[in-house]
Length: 405
Image (cartoon, rainbow, N blue to C red; front, side, top):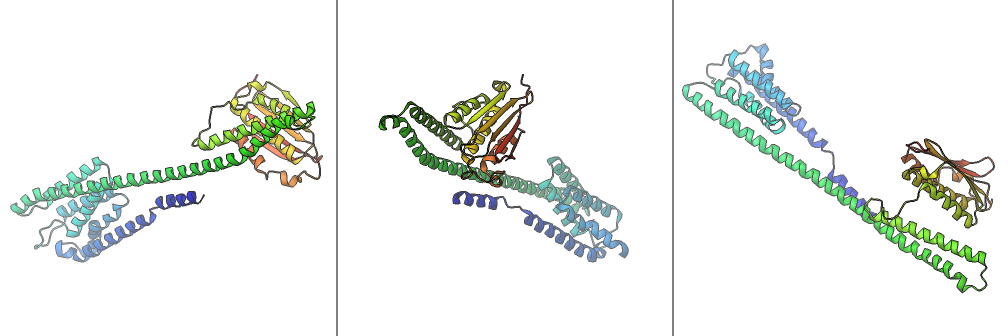
C-alpha cells in the first residue's frame, strides 16, 4: 500500500496546475506594455508633430496592444499594424526623424507578430507575416537607398522572426505532448501498481483461506471412514459440508481470477443465473435452515445480468439471516413481473443470545451496502430493515429492461 501511495504522490506532482506560470506571464505582459507606454509617451514629441492632448492616445496605439499578446495576439497585431499605417500616413514627422512610427511601435509589432506565429493558425500567421512585411517595406521608404534596404531587409527580418516563432511553437507543442505522455505513463504505472497489490492480496487471501477450506473438505469427506458408527444422516451432513466447502473454494478461485485479470471478469466458468437461486434454497435447507420459498413467474426468462445480481443478493441475504438470526425460519418470495423481478427475504426473530440488535443491521454492514451497489448498477433498489416482530426483511426490485412473458 505504501508503494501505491508513493506512486499516487508522483502522479500528483506530475499533473500540477500551471496556473502560477500563466500568472507570471500575464504580469510580465502587463509590465512590458506599461514600459513601452512609459517610453512612447514622453518621446513622441521628438519623432512626430502631435498635439499634447493627443500624445497619450497615439502612444497607447504604439504600446498598449501588447496587452493582448496573451489573450488574442491576432487582434493585438491587427490594431498595432493598422495604427502603424495610420500614423505613417496621417501624422507628420519631425524634420530630423526618418522613421514613420516610433521604435517602441516597431518593437510592439515584433512582439505581437512573434506571438501570432507561436499561437495562431497557420493561415493567420501567413497573413500577418505578409502584411507586416509589406507594411515595413513601404512605410520605411526614405531615400532610394533606404527604400531598397527596407524593401529587402525588413521582409527578411520578418521572415526570420516568424520562422523563429514557428520553431518555438513546434518545441512547445512537442514538450506539451511529451508531458501528456509522461502523465499517461505515470497513471499507467500507478494502475499497474494497484493491480499488482490487488493480485498480491488475492494470492495471500487464497493461500490462507483455501488451505483451511481444503482441510474442511478433506475432513468432511474422510469423516465417515475415520469415525466409526456414522449414521446415514450424519454421512449426508458431512457430504453437504464438503459440497459447501468446495463451492466456497471455487468462489475464492473466481475472486482470485478477477483480481489477477487486470480488471476484466473471467468468462471461463458460467455465472449463476436467476434459476440457480433454487439450488441456494435447497443447499440452505440441507444445511439445517428452516427455509420456505415461493416463486411466481419464469426465472429462466430473467436476463443473465439481472439473474446474477438477484442470485448474489439472495445469497447474501440468506447468509445474513443464518449468521445474525441462527435457527430462525426464513421466508423467500420471488415474483417475476413483465418489467422487473421482486425478491423478499425475511427471517423471523432468532436466538436473542446471538442475534445482533436491529440498530446494527440497518445499512451499516458491508453486505447490505454490497447488495445496494449491485442493485443500483442495474437501476434497482434494495431496502433492508427490521420487522415489527423482531425479525429482518430485505426487499429487492431489479428492472428487467425487457418484457418477460
